[in-house]
Image (tube, rainbow over all chains, first blue to last red; front, side):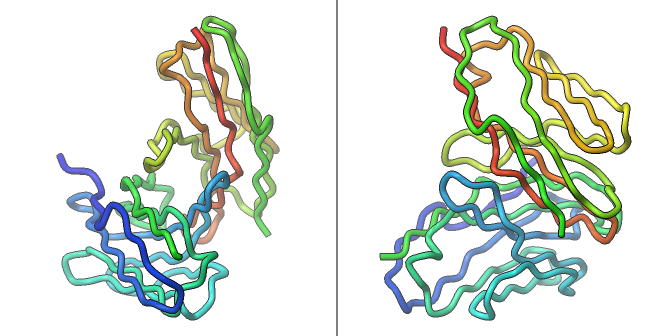
Amino acid sequence: DAGVTQSPTHLIKTRGQHVTLRCSPISGHKSVSWYQQVLGQGPQFIFQYYEKEERGRGNFPDRFSARQFPNYSSELNVNALLLGDSALYLCASSFNPDSTDTQYFGPGTRLTVL
Amino acid sequence: EDQVTQSPEALRLQEGESSSLNCSYTVSGLRGLFWYRQDPGKGPEFLFTLYSAGEEKEKERLKATLTKKESFLHITAPKPEDSATYLCAVAQAAGNKLTFGGGTRVLVKP
């Protein structure tokens, strides 16, 4: 069975640009969460979506937005990129966020902002 | 606010030298504590979920335990392929947003 998939694998952008990252959850999973992992640190929660609705938001500026589609895939958008947005962006999927279902992570998208 | 602290930050072991990693947490209403393994440049790989104090889980050379304030990941007779960063995370009562610690980088030398 396919795990969580993310695209693209790597991305290089310049300051001020916009980026869209994509995630497809494990088949049957209806919840997608996004995390940012800066080098040398643990992942930080950005968003959680379930059944196309936002269920949680971390402490990130409004430049960060996301959405979930009817097929449960998700997009993370970041506007007006800053150097500090350089990180590994991780997507995780689970069946139901209202339980302690395990979140399974994708391979991540490495974003470099120059 | 939920807090997770992992120690040590880095650990160098000789092959076969057993050791333990610590994860201390502060959370209002723990729903679950998770251990993940992360190889460089890759996404975290799920290892264990612990739900209540006293619970233990094992997988090959790894054993995770949980108390009311901390969790331990014991590595018994490690091999070089156990080299990775081990991440601890907690999910609180509302939803299953994960709060991660900074991780412990483990290097096992042959």
